[in-house]
Amino acid sequence: MSIRIRIIDLRRTFVLQVWSRDTDRRLRQIWIAIRTRERDWAVVFCNALDLLMDTSKVDRQRISFAEGDGQIAWQRTAFWTIIRLDMSAFSKKKRRLLAAALLKSARYSD
Amino acid sequence: MPKVTESALVAAPPEKVFQMFVEPQRAVMFVPGLSRINNISPDKRSWDYEFNWLGLVISGHSECTASEAPKKYQFKTVTGNKSTWTYRCEPDGANTKLSLEVEYEVPQQQLARFASETVLQKMNQNTAREIVSHIKTLLEP
Image 1 (tube, rainbow over the protein chains, first blue to last red):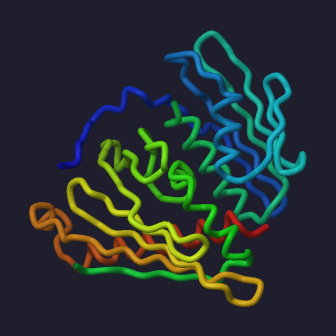
Image 2: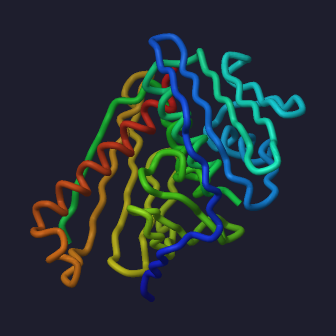
């Protein structure tokens, strides 16, 4: 068997990080997801948090995790979705890793 | 086959560390560049993977070859350049010594692109170091 190489990933959602503030106590980021297809963001992020072994609670267009010290919220517009991540729990290194993992989920999960 | 190894002391019991490996999809959360795990077999012993490397999507197939909770988890990539990944969890007081060993075939055709085998080894070493560091970070507060 051989590996397969593709130049274009048609299943990917284009998600750009447009703003970030990372202090010793808190990490906040804003992402813009271009709407090429409908996505159930609650499912995307709850699955990611489950894989990260964190419990999450969905409240309409917002998920809280890390016992309420982490939040991810999304707001749909006609052409894109604005996603806001806010975390004040964990170490700085862990916050960065969780943010990167959630961003990866937003881009690649189905 | 050449191999690289990395280890770290994780402030968590071996059972908790081992949980990171039993769900194949979880690897996306801590393996750099790994974007998707698909087509997981019901017994979780085989799956397809996709890496996103500088915009290129590289996909292949993996098979679990050992799952001895909570001590050893091993899988092989069976497409393209073959590699064997072995995670070991050894208790160390209340902590766990986590080690990762990656044995890999040197890709002869691609070798020219990397200039030398040493550079390839360094890349793999860095990847293994990042993986172990990410697991430690995820499992600690």
